[in-house]
Length: 163
Image (tube, rainbow, N blue to C red):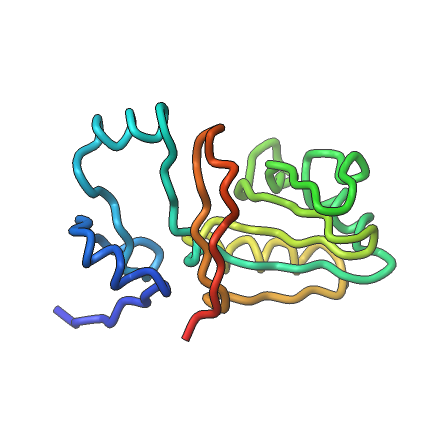
């Protein structure tokens, strides 16, 4: 069996230092559990949890047709977004099914930032590339991100550049 080197997020050593049970996900060495499912679930429900999202994809649509491109590619109304707001949405496949779900942030009326699932980055990019000749940008693993989870998670998101 071939030994494939897994990609690591900027928080990888912290996960190991905290004793996380690690596993491969979308080519990354990712934490799947720390102290146990019930204890972690209760902590997130009653306090706050943090999720390392550094492995997620990063797409951008820019230019005068960006809004129309996003309206066509996703099921939700991106016109309802104001600058800095986000929608949870999905990419329809044109046959009554779904290609994938993702987050869409409106940076400006002509600039949208998308966060596709790590395991589907290539599939999502290929599908969106078939839709229109829109100015797009694709990046992966350039920024380390840890997102708080739970209503009490008003603390700022931690970000840092990947090395």
